[in-house]
Image (cartoon, rainbow, N blue to C red; front, side):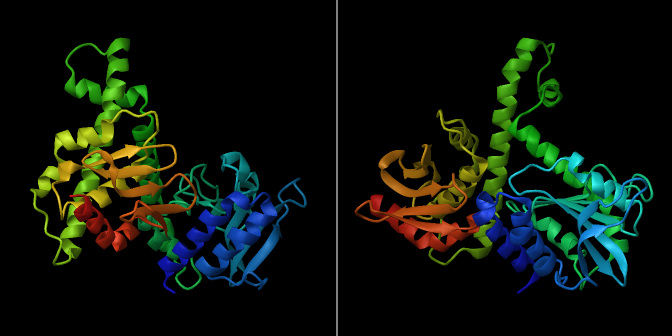
Length: 363
């Protein structure tokens, strides 16, 4: 099994089991030890490679332990501190890591709840662990760009110099990506002001801020929606089957009126970006049979529906994305729904034939 496949397998396990893990020990057994073993490649039962409950007395502190120390040639290389999977990680959880980092040869420390892995080094001051991680791996939503960096930490590919040299850029790129994502979800006053002052010539008053907060959120959502469209069109252009020939200008898929309708549809239900991305995949498939303007969506409490002609009697697919396990719901000619479990949105393409058949049936 390739390295990225091993990460994907563990990520699936985390998604399926995280809700059932209630203690720190269970988190270690279910998620942390498999990560050390299958991802990093160290033998968790060999004390020459992995030392559980690692003790290194620090000053007046006696008998404190770090959950795991990964060894190479008799020297500590990575320190790991664990917390229960249901809890959020905070810098206060890393107190032992801070102390032990300065008294061992370790240049890498990890704080984890089994789901999120935060990796630290000493970029800010030698032999002193940074307060902010240089790499954050979230197994509930794996960023594929981080996989090569995680591989550098594995036993067979361990490259400390490469890790440290890349750490500073990784630290700030990752922090910026998380901050941008946070601003897209809930824009701060500074974010709203930054963009408003570039398009609005009046004074930035409280009333203007209130007005433009919604506009900035809408523009951000439409921007993401259009980028998703662009990516889908590229993917479909590379892998389209011979019977998939759109009968409309592909640019129309990302046209401003359609994007505005997709994002701004009034509903009391919170529509997620993941649902919109799934919708755009279904829409791109359906456009091989009908014009893109005929494909619409409606969100509900239990599922997100993709419809033909905005008619709930013409369902093309239902996206059940509210639980840990995602399902693609497809309906037959009798409106009987079959739910197909999916791990990634790309798996929707595997059902392209059924989606196009539904479009043909209704059209």
